[in-house]
Structure formats: C-alpha cells, structure tokens
Image (cartoon, rainbow, N blue to C red):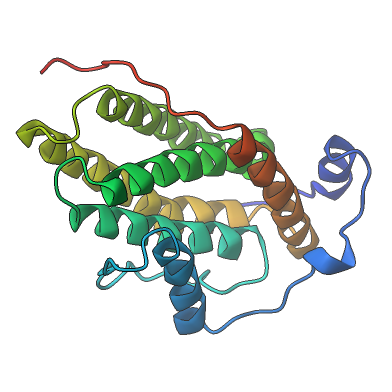
Length: 220
C-alpha cells in the first residue's frame, strides 16, 4: 500500500488546532493498558467481576496514537459486556451498566468515524475496510436500540444480549487485527497521534449528548 499523507487535511478539519501538550501521551505496557481500561468499566459497578478472559492479539494496545486509544475503549467495552453477563433480571446494576454501554458504544463509534474512518475512506486502498467498519457500527446501534426496547428481566433479553456481545466482539477483533493494520499503513505517525486528539474531543462531546434509543428492530 502507498503512504497517503493526511496531516494538513486532518488539521484543517479540526479547525487548524495543533496537538495540545496535555493530549500528548507516552506508550503504556499492554498489560497495564488493559487493566486500566477494565478499571474504568468496573467503576460503574464495583461489586461485579469483569472476566474478559484472553483478548485477541493486537500490536496496538498501549500505543500513544489513535489505534492505541481505540483499543483502550475496546477493552473497556469488553469489561462492560462481561459485567452485564454477571447481572440478573432488571437489577440496578444491569440497568446502570446497559446505559453506560449504550453511551460508550454510541460515542465511540461517532468519534471513531470522524477521527479515523472519514479520512481513511478517501484512500482507495482502504475504502472497503472503512465502509465495513461503519456498516457494522450501524448494525450494533440497531441491536442496542432493540435491546433497550425490551424487558431486560425477560428470558429472551439475555439471549439477545448474547447476540449483541458476539457481534461486537467480532467487530472489534476485526478492527484490531485487520482494519487498523491496513489503516496504519496509509497514515503517518503524526496523523495517527493527532487523530487521537480529535477522537478524545469528539467522544467526550458525543457521550455527553448520548441517549438510549428504544426501538424494536428485529422480530421476536
């Protein structure tokens, strides 16, 4: 794949702002990066275990660029999904964790699309990867809305939740092992680090505005 320099374009889309000192980060050991992400999820329901087990191999965990930041969120989401599996009926923990999961996934997807895929989409070498990732974001959003519209104390809710979990874990594994690898080849290091700044800013805005949509999307 040929290198595609996006620096000036990315900075222009972000309003010409250069990376701020507080946004510059250093690499973190993969094990610590994962533990820190899980800890953020556990803060929502400290009494629940977050058994995420082994995670797919990725070279990006702990990296100080957009891909390391996205994997950090992925590990946080893996923990939220694992904790939801520990809940029963319409318990306060299940309700609180589900709302947090919805807000996290919505904000993450919107920020990822702006910071990463909107630029990668323009490169013919990676257009298909970007389109695939964005399409899966829509599928996951539909699954969340469908779950939110149903009684979480019903026997079928956990079955539908399991389908969401499987779909999301598949999605982030593909991103970490295939799509991010392809995108890395067409972005400069400066671009990848600046994209992290864009992602952080957009995710904070999106999460603050996120709402839980309730709409039956699939047949019972």
